[in-house]
Image 1: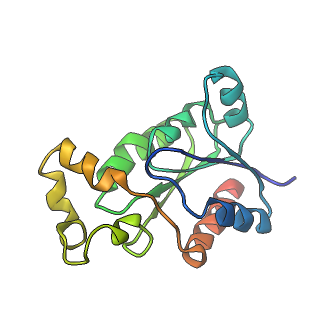
Image 2: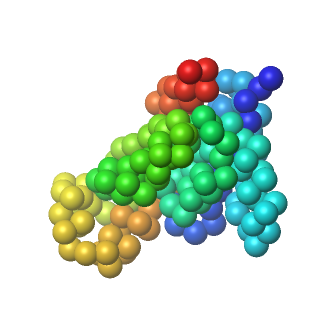
Length: 169
């Protein structure tokens, strides 16, 4: 049986710009891929999430749907640029582990963020993103949290392979 992967799409910020290519890469590796965005019908979406072996999403509210995942499923979080380690781990990583889910993180580099089109490379967003965290939530919300990502498919494919390994543990 092919494992079921649910990719949570988003229409707000932190979109996966090459979602179609990511879905195609996952399909080529043997996943049955469904792309969906949570809507008003929570029970139906919960059932969809519960039928998945893998939940893939860019850091954000869509990952809260991991609460509907079956035990031992895999959560693959795409972590945006900007020193988001603490947020990724504490908002989604540790809760996933606490729910007996297997968890992977893919950290976006500066070539994969839409911020490269908005800010010069000598801007604090690239030179010292941690400094933005010390300036409070409003500054983060206006910079780091307003990015979309386009993952490097060659690099990301390694994480898709790790996802297969996690499913077989």
